[in-house]
Amino acid sequence: MSKNTQPPLFTAPGSRGAGKGRADRGQPSPAAVHEFFDPARLAQARSLIGMTKKRLADELGVTPAAVSQYETGTNRPRPDLLPRLAEILDVPLTYFLAGRPHARLDPSGAHFRSLRSTRAYQRAKAVAFTEQVWELTYALEKRVQLPVVDLPGFAGGEVHPGTDLPRDPASAARALRVAWGLGTGPIAHLVRRLEAHGIVVVTPQRDEDLRSVDAFSTSRLPRPLIVLTPNRTDDVYRHRFSAAHELGHLILHGDTNPGDITQEREADTFAAEFLTPRESILPELPARMDLHKLSQLRADWGVSVHSLLYRCRELGLLSDSSASRAYQRLHDLQGQPGFAPDPLAGYPGEQSALLSQAFALACDHGLTMTELAHELAWSTAQVRRILGVEEDRPALRLVSNSS
Image (cartoon, rainbow, N blue to C red; front, side):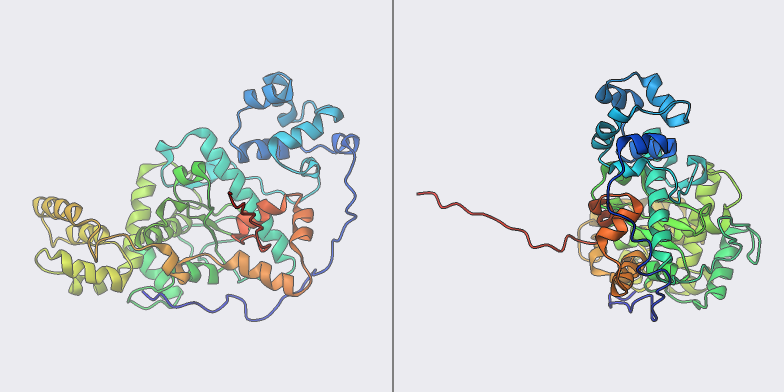
């Protein structure tokens, strides 16, 4: 597994639509927004900040029933309430206007790795975030030609398991390696490879709700999408396994409703075989327990020692009692060289770059951050958060000298 910087995902600009859509910057009146109010945008904005209907109602000075009516479309907020509504939800007033592309994703259409340990509002927030990722992707794809989706069985928002790949998780993992020309050895730069095959991968920052949700994915949008939440970025090996696990969901479970523990186990089996194929890893695994040997394999194969231990047990090299002792010893070695977490920051090939590179290329052809935010009806801060683009203005710091 290499730490080398990876080349860009795009080698030629696709400037379709660049410079178009520069609408009048004048803000619509509250009356105009009332006339063309989109109830789904209210529900999305509320979910994005994790706010309950009751709390929004209290902030707005209306009843929770009124907020429900606003979100179902049976009633609309009065024009005089709309500026306050935008302020509470921290969105531009134009956010509530109908007419913009909107990916409607039902929470049942996303695979959550930790479904049972997350609360409903956290899943709703994750879904709303995923919808916004798609909207940003759509806006960029009008200007830049993104990699073609190369996922067996995928057809514009649906995955049909069994199309070109076996249904058995391990067999599917081996077949995908063949389809993608990955050979039988370690896979370097896994996240960049996913992006190169047209899968959108994002890692949201600074959000405790999304951090607690863990990784999740969906194949029910025009592009398959994986969200790798930041609670695993302290260890590149856990991060890579999460990515492979979500890839397993995309391959195996596109036509089934998420939430079944069996699906999680199948995704784990897929990830283990995809990252460490049985026929390749078996000759390298020690016949007797040797954690330091597994630590060397960790660096070579890009998987955690814990995963390699599980692989030893799974492949019959360890008894249950031996594995239990090995896990205890591994716990004692935590933090020591070869066993300490290896932060994601040192591995550019495991960090998502598709959207940020697409934005940079679009900017080369005339797009600005302000224009993109205006088109999406987002704040520029929200565009930056999803792109993972840092604020480019220098910060002014005033220092006072005490006498």
